[in-house]
Length: 352
Image 1 (tube, one colour):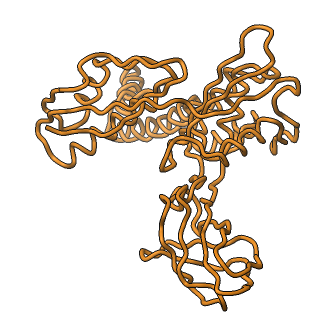
Image 2 (cartoon, rainbow, N blue to C red):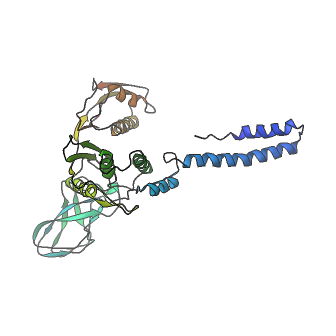
Image 3 (tube, rainbow, N blue to C red):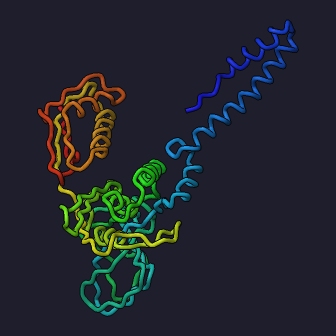
């Protein structure tokens, strides 16, 4: 990568040019400094240009132009969805955009109107807020904001909770997908195509493809959603990702993309293998515990499906956390193996 000369070096160089012809004065020094300053601006501009010509170094605005050029679309924020169980004393009309809220002010609404009879019924709802902030665990109690005749005030969220809420894709994630697109160009349905299609779906952060044996006509794709309360996909997640991989219109290239028609798609979640480390930390503070836990989560999220976790990796990750002076990993005591379809995630951390 191009490195521009320092301003101090440019000043010395310019003054040296004047010294070589025997001209010395305060005015000449001032002229030399002004000239060096202008040259420094040009050199810095050249350095900026050198970073923009490659996607993994480009600024955010230039990266978006690269993505448009390569047909990679940034994933927009999506709302969390779920099912709300309501109770009716008689037939009631629930208009679209009827809202319920929790005690802490979290609000959901039904996107479409419904006519329901007396008894209990389940209606689909979505969070009012966009993004991962709308994700909630199940069995949450809601209260109706504006009364409706024959509709009881109390409602319960299903045990599956509010899912599918995802923030607008981060620049780092977009940059990674662009590099993946450049390094593994479309090939009519190879393993990299399936991984790319899965990762283009809202909320999907990691995906893997296990090709079928020779002469078989199926392919297995596994994926997770790291920003959801549970990283494992729900039935709805699997259905929408399968629909997208089956065929979709690229909004940038306006070309139809998707799996070959003869290939059978098996879409599923990976098997989960939790590790529950026991750690002695010095100094042992709440802040350091949180930082160590975040670092371990990040370590495991960077691993591939079925990848072995070495005990030395865990130790090095903890040691690299700023503020950690010393530590002991009491458990596990050996490296952690994972099957080809297993994903290692962090379980409960015990602090000693």
